[in-house]
Structures are given as C-alpha cells and as structure tokens.
Image (cartoon, rainbow over all chains, first blue to last red; front, side, top):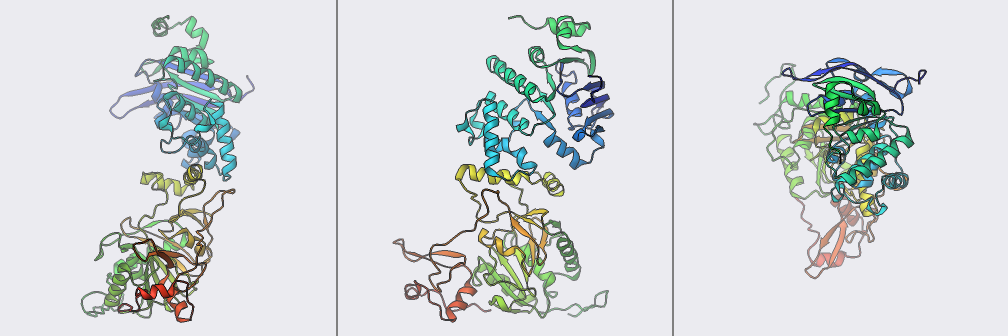
Length: 260
Length: 312
C-alpha cells in the first residue's frame, strides 16, 4: 500500500454557501485505487456538499481536490480546463445519483443510456455498442428483452441498476454514490448492495459512498468517515468505527439503529 | 435618395423609399462581418444582430437578411421553396428583392448567381460562381436532445457530440434504421456538427465538396453559419449502419427523370397519384428538351403542370 499512489486526495476541503451557511469544512483524506470510502452522518451534516466538491460539481472555497488524471499523477481537479474536467467526468469518473431520474436520460431506452458513454468517447459501431450494452444489462440483472424499453417503464430498483450499468460500462476508476439505495424497499436494497459489491470488487473501482444508512457502509465500504455539522468527527476502518465508535456523535449514530 | 455615407459610398435606392436591398448599410456590414466569421469557421453558428424584416419569422427572415447583405446590382436571383419557384414563399421573396434591389430574377438554376432556398438543393450541380443561401428555422442540431443553450454551446466548443449518436442509436433500436429523413445532421470539416436546414437527406451528399459557397441564415434564432466551397460535409452514421438517401421506385411522372427527389401529387379522390420532380426548374428544362414521363398525358388532361409562370 505504501508505494501506491493515491487515486483521490482531498486536502482541507471546505465550502461555505452564499449567506454564510457552512457546507463542509476542513475535510482531508486519501483514497487509494480499489478502495471504498463511506461517508455517514445525519441530514445537514455536509455529506452531499462534500460529494459535490469532490465530484467537480461545486468548486470548494477552501482546500484542494486532486485526482490521478489519466494515471499521470495527482492533479488539482479544479485547475483542469473545463473540457478536461468534463472528459474526466464522462470517462474516469462516474456518479450514481440517489434518484435515477437525475442520472438517466428518461426519454432514451435502457440500451441507449448504457451506450451513451461509449458513443461519447467515439464508439461508432452500432452492433458493438449494442453487444456491450446487452452484456452490461445482463451484469446488472436486467433481462435482455428490456434493452429497448424506456427507463420509466422500469421499477425503481431496475432504474438504479440501469444507472449503475450506464456508469460502469466506461470502466471508471472512481465512482461517487449519493445514497445509492435511498428510496428502495429493503429486499431490493439488499440485492442492489450485493450486486454493487460484486461489481465494484470485480472491476477494482474505487468509490466514495455517501449515505445515512449504516447497513450500506457496513456492506460496501472499507473505511468510514463520520460527519457532523460539516466536519469529520471520526474516521477509521468501517468495522472498527461501527463496532467501537469513539466520538460521542458516532456512538449516538450507531446506537440509533434499530436492531431488527 | 442618393444620400452619401460617411465612407463616401453612395446610398442607393431602387424604389425611392428603401435603401438598396432593404437593409441599411450598417446592418449589411454587420451581417457581412458575421458571414466572414462563419465562413472562417465552417459549421460554427455565429450570432448576429438579426433585424425585424417585413415578414413573419418562419418565412425566411434569416435567409433574406443574408441575401440582402450579399446581393449586388449585377446579381441574378433565384428563390426556391420546396424545390419549386412558383410557391408562395418563393414568389413573395422574389418580388421583395425585385422591388427593393431591382435585381434580375430567374427560375433557371444555371443563370442564377444567388439562390435562396428553403428545403431543397437544386438538382443541377452548382458552380463556383454561385452562392446558395438557406433559410433555417432551427439552427441548433442538438436542441431536441439538450434544451439548455449554454450547454449546447459548450458541447459544440468541446466537440462533445456523443449525444447525437445516442439519437441515431435510438432510431435504429426502435425502427431498425435511422429514421431522420430531413434536417439530417452533418459533420462539417471534421469538426462542427451542423443542421443542414430541413432539406431532405437526399440532398445531403450534394453538400459534400460543393463548389458553391453555402450560407445559412436563421432569423428567429439570430444565427448565421456557412460551408465554404470544397468543404467536407459528412452525414453522421454508424459504421455498420451507413448513411443512405431515399430511393424512388418510379421516375418523375412528367419528365421521366430518375435519381432526383420526387414529390407526391394526388390526382383524384380515388387514390390515383403520381410522383413529380420537386425541382420545378429541372423538370421544366427536361420537358422542354423533349423528355416525356409516363404520366405526362394523364397530367395534361388535368391541366398540370400549369404552364403560366409567375411574374418573374
């Protein structure tokens, strides 16, 4: 691990919204290839602001976000030119939104959604795009005969799986997930998590997973960051933090989960 | 009127009330500058200060402004609408320029120096001495895929055209082929994706390496773009679903022409119909040269084609 270059490095990242509302402050961490970092905390704790800062959506007012662009070493994401950053978002990065409507083109078929990233980088062979799209729909357990159906004819869980296929098809090195199982019922959640865990492990993708659901991070993430009031209050290996929380807020969070 | 401009250039009026070619000299100058920019960056939509014209948007206000800016006293103007010289839009635009510019008008493609067109490219190959001016209703080829203007401009700037192929993919996935038949998107000079205006895709190959200068004016959207002579214009497609034009089973009913774009004409209320050249000048030329189509007799019995030309 020590001779490995980090994939993503945040250094003192902080953002204050117009009007003085604190989004997040002084967040630092390093993410290595293939590693999954969970970010938990209650609503308003700055999780989503942090994710937006990391994923290129909001330029943080303080600190730096650096990414190993094109395996050429760490570069400040916000110092990249806009076309470079957009290219990064469409190729080496992926974003799984909580609401699949934000991540899918709802008026384009499932196959078209999955094929878009290939076409973005110059795929111009219909047959190959289709074969690849079928393969990916199969990997997220969507029946091949549904390839030409619009996402709105799919259930919430299926939409979420199409969204995942759409991103993973470009073999990204880093995926950001914002409440990937939010709004799904528990049995669907369990299957989706199982699927995600398998895919992410197979591909060796690194991920930052933001959620308020401790079960999600327990299953997916290697390391955990607990946030409160825009700041990181505790970090550590996931099992360590969940089984032996040190910070009072972490203890509260862990003890708040109902044991079924 | 003959007032004198600051540059010493004489203003000139044909009918005693309007400046030559309707637009004032400053406006023409502004449009010419935009035209130069558009020609310098083939396929790029250059914004311009579009003026109100004495006709409604959608009737060719963009094309008219372009024509008005480039037309001179020696020019010979041809105006076509859906390939025909005798349709309302063509007749009124021709009349407009005869009044405000006093130029000679023609219906013969070969004689024209400027051809303003809506929906067609003439069948006769154009030459280096001609300029083709298109009337464009929707200049942005990405508009239906991406409604945000700021975003489409970025997509053009960074050449992010994957979305255009998503549209073509959807066509093939649903219908087995690319179903766009008009305004079929093209890539100009291996850079910009451009809307060729609503010409049938049948005409797209004519744009490739065309010797004539092609200018596109969109009045409502206030955009001008251009394809300089001898420029690569490639219709977008997939490697395994190449671009194809429409094919017509029968020749033109009046002149027997093959390999031209045909319009359907209903002959009676019993379902009888025929297909005739969309390019009326091309059809007339062939008939005058003695070509007779399979339906010529039946059409003549119905008084078609109407032999009376308009005032041009």
